[in-house]
Image 1 (cartoon, one colour):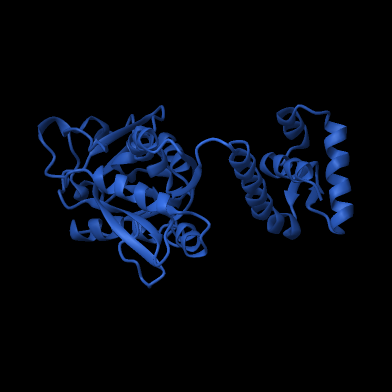
Image 2 (cartoon, rainbow, N blue to C red):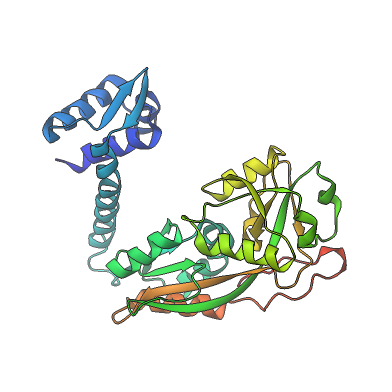
Length: 311
C-alpha cells in the first residue's frame, strides 16, 4: 500500500463525501472512487458504508483512520528532516494541547520559543487530556498542555502553569450579557452546556465544584465535544456556558463573554512530559510555558477587568 492511497482514504474519511474530497485533492471524483475501491480490495474489507447516498466509516475504516493519519504525519516529518541534510540538525517538537490552549496559549509562547530555538520543527496536535496522557506515556508527543492537576503515576511528569479564571459565555440577548460581572449564584436557574465528564473530567468537575461552592448544582441541559460547538449552542440562545479565559479569544457572533465575580472560579493549566526520558525539545518548551505563566487571577475589578494574558 502506498502513502498516496492513505492520503486518498484520509481525505474521504475526513469529508465523508467523495466529491468534496476529490475537489480538495484536485482530482476527478471517479478516479478517487476507483482508488478507494482498489484500496478496499487490497485490504479485503470495506472501509466505508454507502447507505442512502451517504458515507460512513466501517469498523475497519475507523480502525485505519488514526493509523493512516499518524503514518502520513510521520512521513511528512521524515521528508522535512531528510531534506535538510547538510544544514543545521533539526528536531521535531510534538505538542499536544487542549483546544483552548491551541488558540489561547500557544500563539503567545510558541513564536518566541521558535525564535530562540530555530532548529526546532513544531507539530501541534489538538488533543483531549486523556489522549495527551496516553500519547506522552507512549512517546507519541513530547509535551502536553492540559488541565491535569496530579500526575497520577510515575510515567508522567507534571508542571503546574497556573490558574485561569472562568468566564460566562452568554447569548447576546440574555439579560446577563449587559452585566459587568456575574456571580455564579445567578446561574442557579440557567441551563448550561459543557463537555461530557468522560471527555474532560477536570473541566467538568471544576465547574461543578465552583457552582456547589456558590450554593447550587449546575443544570447541564446539553453536552458538546469542542469549544466551537459549546459556543454555537450558546449563540442559539438555549444555554449558557462557563469557559476558561483563553476560550474568549474565539469570537462567535451572538456570544458575549462576561467575567465571573467569584474570585475562586478558576481552572488549572499544566504541562506534562514523559517522566524518566523526556525529549530535550519537550523539556525546553515546558520551561518556556512555565516562564510565561500568568499572575494568579484576583477579584474582578469594576467594569469587568481585563483578561489574563500569557507571554
